[in-house]
Image (cartoon, rainbow, N blue to C red; front, side, top):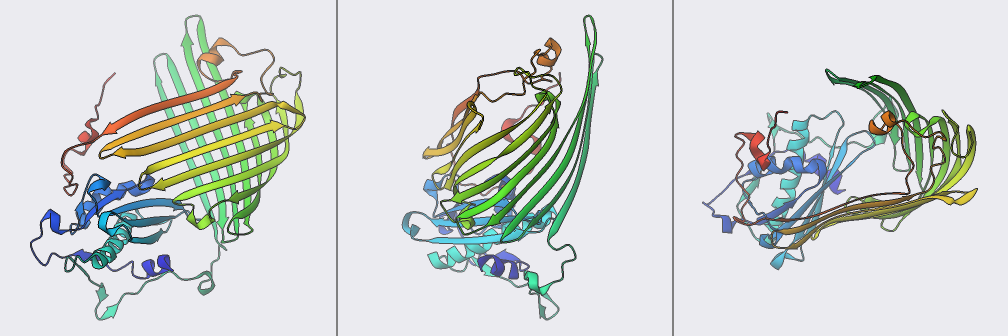
Length: 431
């Protein structure tokens, strides 16, 4: 109901109106915590909502605002805003949502997103005792009050029956006197999302042409890969879902002329699915056959084969006032030989240690022993250097860790758009 109410008043502009000359300390202090697409609201928020004080650290704030977003079935998005009181307002909690359409422009999304956030701030200001700093002004056409709202599926006739289609194509050509590369991509996607069912179909084609001059001649490589993917999911309860994944591919880099794969799946969510924007903890299991035909005979003397595989996946993520953290683990193996397996683990964390000090950690590790598709005769030096053919490996890993510390003024209200390319002290180099 919150989301529907929000859209029902979503066409009313929220105007900040200072009734008295206010100083920074007389206004509610807000710490805005964004992720992904919601971060592009930062400058607009500070410009359009001047009747609060934006601070750079949550320790200085009266209210911690967390914005998250996810994609809707139509290709639009839903932005969720959580308002969490701090200090003397620690008992305060509120939530707002804004739904955008896939045809909305960036300007429309930005304005409505800022409006959504502002409505929640106005409610907090009223509850917290900050009176007279803002007025809600309804937009009128003549004497008629505009009352646009979301309508239910039963109130409209949809000739597409909730199906959404997308076509994408792109090309990239680059070169120099000793090298030329041409890449082209095309894809078609069809999806349908209802409260109970979720379907997605995707077809893609990629081509890659390379011409590289070497000391003893010219190396040329042309390859075209394609993929057909389909998955369906059915909501059993707030915690259980079932589904299936189908995949057909051609992948020359992985020595697979064609691969067909079909895997039924089941998933359990510890938290109800509607809460997945801020926190998620899911377990899933998949099992099914995969058929492969190879370009070259494999290290196991096979030119084609069908193997059954099973996999388990666990994902946990949190976005809270102390920061963000997520961990994913997966394990799979072939049923005919459990020694042919793959285990992977990845983790990310951005943790606030103290005022202005943040710890950033990224890491991933995988143990690989399921490369049954490796070509028996090996690969050439050119294929290795240009990364055109995958090589045998026992493991892969990556890790990075960092600290960030910020100090100085706690206020974050001022926006200055001059020389925007210099923000972040970025440098442009000419090679």
